[in-house]
Image (cartoon, rainbow, N blue to C red; front, side, top):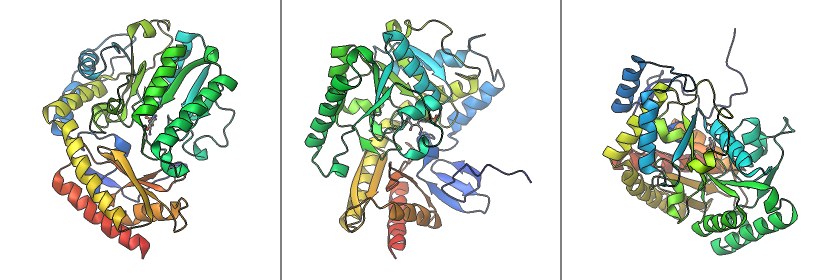
Length: 417
Ligand code: PMP
C-alpha cells in the first residue's frame, strides 16, 4: 500500500479533523490547544471567518491568474496593504509561494544588484530547505548533511547567543560584531560580499531575539560597504513579536525584507520587499514562478492584514506575549532545568539544560511529547534541539494562555517524573 514518505518527521500523532481559532480537533475526537500555529503560520487563528470568506469568494472568481501572464486584483490590493505596514523605503514587492523561495529571490537580487558573489549568514539561522536556502542555514546539520555540495559563496558569522556562551549580552554582541569584521577582513572582503542575511529573532535556531545593537552594527557595516542587508522576517514578521515586523524592536530597517508564513493565515504566499531602485537592478523575468502570488492566497493575505488591523492583533500579541512570558518565567523559577526563557511577543521559548548546564535535548523532546498527552501542541527548536517554542495565534485569549500554561506546567512535571 502506498504511504507517506518516512522522510516526514511528525512531532505528534494527531490527525486533524477540523480547527478553529487556537484549537484543533482530531479525528479521534480530542481537542488540542494549538501553540504551534503550523510553525508560526496561522496568525489569525485557524479558519478565521473573514479569511475563509475571502478565500471562498476569490475561489469563485479566479483561482490561478498567473502573474506573469495576467495581473489580478488580490495581488494589487495586497501590495497596497503591505505598503501601509512596510518601511516606506521598501516600495517594491515581488511575490513567491514559500519562505525558501523568497529567500532565494533575495539572494539573487542582492547578487545581481551588487555584482558580488558572497552572502554572510549568521550561526543558528534558518532560511529554508531548498539547496540555496539550506546553504544559508546553520540551525542543525540535518538541513545540509548528505546533499553537499550546496550553494557556494556563503559564510557563516557568529550570532550573539549569550546564554550558550555563558556571557552577558553586551559581550556576546561585541564578540559577534568583531568576528564579522574579522570575516570581512580575512575571508569575504566587502568587495566580494553582496549581502548579510539575518533573522530579527532566530526561529528554528532557538528563538533568540537579535539584540538591537547587533542589528544596528550590521546596518552600519552594510551602509559603509554597500552590502545589502536582508532581514528574514518569515517567522518573526506579521505581528508575531508584538510589533508588526521583528526588526521594529530596533532602530534599523533593511534593504530587503522577506515575509511569508503568517502573511496569509495558512495559504502559501511569500514576498520580498525592497526599494524600487534595488529591485530594478535585476532584469525583468530573472525571477518568477508558476504559482507565485496566487490569487486565492493573496485574497487570504489581504483579509489577514485587515483582521490584524481591525482586531488590534499586534497589540494583542504584545499583551498576551507578556502574560505568556510571566507564566514561563514563573515556571523557570521552580525548575532549574529551564536554563533560559526568552523571546518577543508571542514568539517565546524555554531552553532546557542538564544538571551540569549542558543542552538537554532529551528533556525538551519529552516536554513536547508529554504535552500532547495533556492536549497541548508545542514544537521544539534550537540547533541542538533543546528548546521548546511556544507560538500561539495572534488572536489568543487570556484564558487560552492560562490554559496553555496550566497544561505546560503539568507536562513539565510529568516529563520530569
Ligand atoms: N526563513 C525562516 C526564518 C523560517 O522560519 C522558515 C521556515 N521555518 C523559512 C525561511 C523557510 O520557509 P518555507 O518553509 O516556507 O520554505
